[in-house]
Length: 464
Image (cartoon, helix red, strand yellow):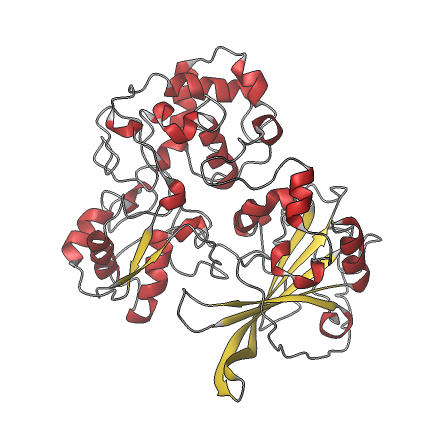
């Protein structure tokens, strides 16, 4: 038997300590049912600011350079707005409790206006759990602090040169062992991707926080008023692409250059070493299971992607819009992403691919995609695993003594990198269910990586 992760929301690990991508930091997001769980509160005396830290007029928790500090008194003076209990996967015991706090004035403003005001502060307290059988039943309650996350609303873009600030917020991370040391480096690579699903909700998973829900204000009534009521499967209103990608209209009017589009596809990087070609093949020999050049990239080939029904039904015939999503989500681009001319060029290039009869014209049913994590993660063939890694992982990683083919975006891989206790986390990093577990890597679905090959790769990486 095996557990299958479908396209449901899963929290990421706090830092991708293992895996096939750059280190990632979990943002202030955990999609789970908000539970009323007891969390230890502890009071601490306010600490003095460092001698060289000059406080800003903007916020008592931000210095003039945009440095972010953890509010010393949030446990006793902030308001608890919700707690999320997190388990590694359905059916397993809760192993983390995420309690979120904000100031009273920030909560009142949100309940009144439906949004957080400039300067609002959110703190998420992430703790390990103690699990015990109590008189009320099987319980999980807070233990040691793992990390604290801090978000500070910045409606004016005050710190454009500070990599901790952007998209209307300041983003900070503090490890439980030292509440004075902020350890995040760049919010775009360490925080932002976790929040992409709710970027239209000001990057906050408000559904996780009961205190933000105002009685009498039903979401479905608001959506109906706005003409956005939820419709049956297959009848959803097409997205407003002009609003999502304002450059789309201009791109449609341009005659793209296919040669320039090929160059963009093969060599353009944005904010890391990833290119389109790193994760997607464009080759007439491509199939949906393997790429024409002999590699097996994480992303599906795009040789005939223009003919996929999920692209045609998106409200546009501009296949390159899918590339723009990758630019924003995986390549570190800033809104709105590609320029109109770049979209037109990339689209012209994609149109030189296969026709509707080509094998890669098959629709990719992402809502039903699966990332199977076997219950037993041993028993694979290490030699087969090394061979597979040499045709798949090598797109972004050095494998053994061989160098990465395209972008060296992840740690070098070799036998013995992981121990027996790491196997489950390793499997999650490779599969990356729903693209929520590993911030920098499009995960290998069942179609691209069979259960047998997954076990083989794990066997190779864990063989000493």
